[in-house]
Image (cartoon, rainbow, N blue to C red; front, side, top):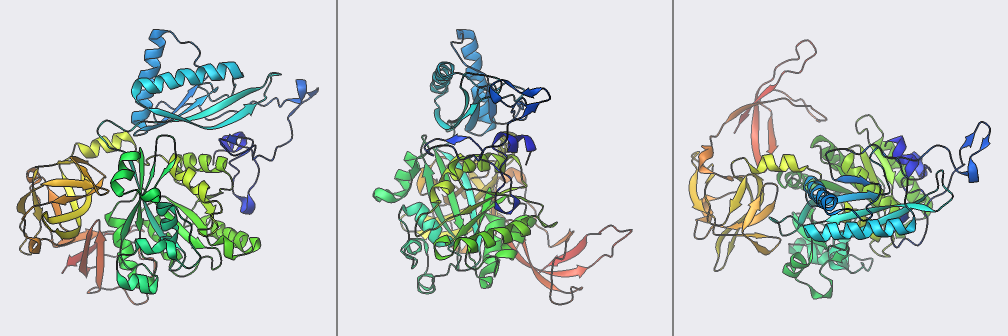
Length: 557
């Protein structure tokens, strides 16, 4: 992490050498400072006045792009200035795809000047007026006192501004849940989405299982989806108080969709399919505190790294272990993350203030990996994970999203159902373009390589009706009386203007991580490309030429 940010947020060292991210900042409702303080700076001719440090604290300079805005103060702006500030807020919200962070009391060059109590109150009042003008809500994330070169108490305030875009029902974030079998993945999701702690015997996970054998064995073998909402004030919206999925969607301004994947090695292909097909924004890697890195944990970590999916780590079952055991597991994770193959910067989250900083750093730097330690039984540190998920912004910028939406429609078919009185329904992800009710698309390829015409009758997202689907969003599409027998997983529904073609031979550049036997010509493998799972035969292998890897040719069968 940038040393300047580390200095701003305290500079104390976490166990295992992780960077400090809390310092003297006060998280809202945290009940006080979480910092550990440090020595004051000195001048050559003695201490600065009042014993204050003579090195000013500062942030990196404000960037023109992105969703973070610095403001020294917003006291009684003129009407012209106010309109300019509103336009600026709209730009920051667009860059953050509905979320922006304002640092009040900070100059554009990053210097933390701070404001007196009266000026800060007036600035927050102006910010509230700006948010009302654009139809957004604001939440104070945290405050920090700045004592540099001033005898008067001054502070900076960090504010989250959230506005659901006019063309969306809510902000959406997809999180894939990885981890070894019996690490507590489904139990954690059950606790988060149902609002009730586990009884220590897996009661919380029962509502997530899709098959009888999963309930009997306690192990997930299929891919399931669970939703967790946050309203404009950052409060959790879940299935507690007998809410339905439709009510959660209506009450939430931000929705987290968890993709619960299998942990057993027997179902590794299902986990790979979930990561490649559903295009998660990030991944949650769950590690049991009492077993550490075991089973498929390394494989799941390797998959996330290979597919370049950002991930954070949750150490579960801390209620079953002594504190020394939890610390040993955290140190083990930090060693693995710092290895040459990972090149990650572990960040241990121990306070609400840490969770806020971790969410921002995780979005800005792909190398930062937050680590949470919690219990689904006692609820220890569970709120820190909720704070992190609430503040975590979309990891793709608005420009990439706009480029995808301008392309022709392409919908990946991952699931196929038959619903009474509705007909054939397919579930999947829209990888590009825009899909609306009534659109005419073609689906394929069929066994003979053809594409068939069909019509989208209706669309549902998170079990609620939706008229327009945009690139990157997952949904189910009703196809009316279209023959289900003609469909299979791995097909795509595309715009007729795309003129789709199929191929049976392709070249690929691969890296062989590990294999128990000889990898040679004629070898049979399973290829995962997006939502496509296809067996393939290696037709030819080219040798390295002048130290450069030459692509290998594969023949699909």
